[in-house]
Length: 133
Image (cartoon, rainbow, N blue to C red; front, side, top):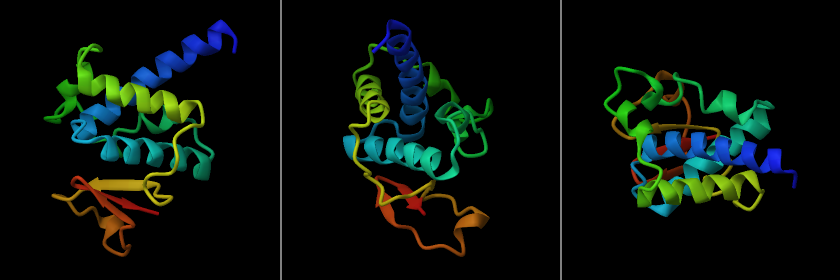
């Protein structure tokens, strides 16, 4: 792998890990893997770049300035839970992360029920995140 590709993967993994950390609080490896898998599934299904997906403030509440989760995006990169998110993101970017969310391409927290979810059944419920195809 070329050095510029290694650096690009490192930067992208950092961005993915920050969003995943902010959205999951890194409650468990299982939920981190599931949300990271969902990002990959959405990219594959919608032929969208991962950077576009993880920049979508409509999908990820933590990206909104007024979100209580927004400050979590600035987590110290030495934080143990963040490091877990980073390793999972790198696994995904290298094609070594199995689908941990049953082909889901959408999610929401269990304390909210968005309109798009009312007519769908969720395919996974992991640590307070509901995943949908």
